[in-house]
Image 1 (cartoon, rainbow, N blue to C red):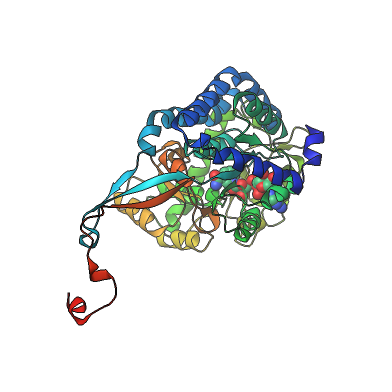
Image 2: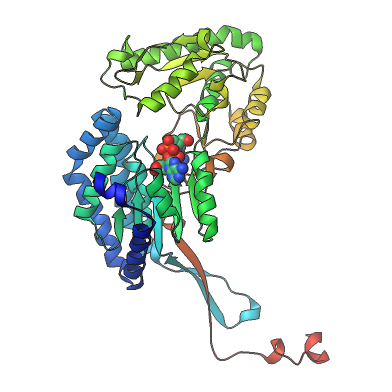
Length: 447
Ligand code: NAD
């Protein structure tokens, strides 16, 4: 595999795209039967190779098996199940209204596959965030290349093996690698690029796509963590004042400490249920956020770390300065800064002064506040009185806005993300009028 990765260059990428386009042009990926066969193969792959998937996720992230099941395996299984159940319905042309001007006529919106598409994914859910977009691409009838994250190498290599073994290699492929291989892929003309990762690389992807006028879905990041904890305080503050926040903050911190203890015991570093940080680079990055002199003394819960095992305990900071790195950068790790604010408006102003996040959360029983939050905060998605769970609702689009991305997927939204909505008007030969043709006589213009 190493050899293969090293030799994959722009020439090979061009050959691969050519092969996939040829396959696509035979029309086989468009057929309902082909789509179903590939979806069933993914289901089979997940059932038969579940243990291998757990093993790879453990190697890459020390992800506990149950967590891997809930957040990766189950997500992929349910996407396949839904797609298999709904595919006929999704593929059906959608009737559309016509106007007097086109009478007699009928119209429909036909979902057609785009062609050869590229999916580039990330490492935090390296299995689900790779396979779920591929399910969308297959469901919509495209030929697909997946480039998994090199930062989760065991999962990347497993995906490469499994796709070869279970899927139709003439139309579904994996290319492993990092920047050079991704760059080689990005030089080619794709019919869509679906990318999950950082806003920084998102810009590189969009620039490469622009060269070929390729549309993109960008599933990017953002500091949802900041919003979560801001909003958590509301539960206790119930929209209260600074004085109340002073009183309630210790309560909130105690509750969070207790919650962490219930999950991971008194020493989280000894817990079997805590995943590790994905790489030593990310460990060092998080360590430097924790050690910045502006925030060092602000740790109120956690703070333990183990460089050898790449583990960091869930760590909470209180009232860190706004200009600290912790508040400026995307954290993407188990660090949670709490900022106390004077009132609801101030907190919403603070949120809105930051780049638009992928998710925002609010905890309250106050309906007015819920409504105010939904109306005032712009984010990819939201959950009220919970976190992250909106991601599991496949009737909701999952995607970002502004700095957190563009486009969305999950359920039917995945099918739509990889389809072109073709407008088709059916006219009959009868009923045509000469009014719209020259010469534009005064009589015609009066009509
Ligand atoms: P990343 O942007 O570094 O890498 C993502 C992918 O891009 C990888 O496959 C990588 O090989 C490729 N890549 C990296 N540098 C590249 C370059 N110069 N040219 C071309 N390709 C390149 O991101 P990451 O570290 O894997 O993931 C972390 C980010 O992903 C965070 O910002 C996080 O918020 C975001 N994320 C978003 C979602 C979502 O669903 N919106 C989910 C998970 C993670």
